[in-house]
Image (cartoon, rainbow, N blue to C red; front, top):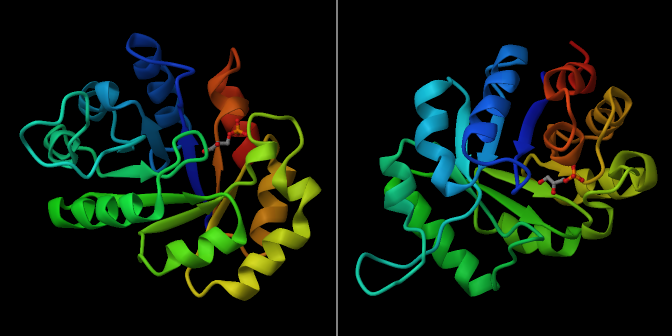
Length: 209
Ligand code: G3P
């Protein structure tokens, strides 16, 4: 099975730099899912064929909701979906539930993040399109979930019914291979691609191309 690869731009790149990064990613593999700031969705959709997701949306409706991001807004900009509940943008479970529902209503796919197997088991009931488990203490570091918590990946595989991805500290092809071997369908990665000089080269090495 070909691994699913999610690249989370976080706030490492925005505006022109985000478009540039997206183009580099597209040259390596046009099927990659990218999570970008809502303000970058429109241009990246226009300039690449990547699967573009917003990094967040809110469940609120049109009207008195200053500063919130409506699912309709990013859908209107042609995002395929939205990330939700990343460890850097945590939502209460009730809010998450409402937001997944709103995304379903407007036709946005959901990539929902969980910080633990326990949280993943709860989130599975919301039937997101993708579920990504990332131990928060490893996010942004040099030690990957594959290297330091292989037993967690195995346990997730045994406990969840749905497919899942893993992320946090992923930086090598070896990390990707271990995650896949232990039962993940793919990986989510950020700093190893978005916070380096040659993102194209880093991505090519990471996915073994
Ligand atoms: O969503 C992916 C992200 O949180 C992992 O970050 O920098 O550890 O690859 P990083």
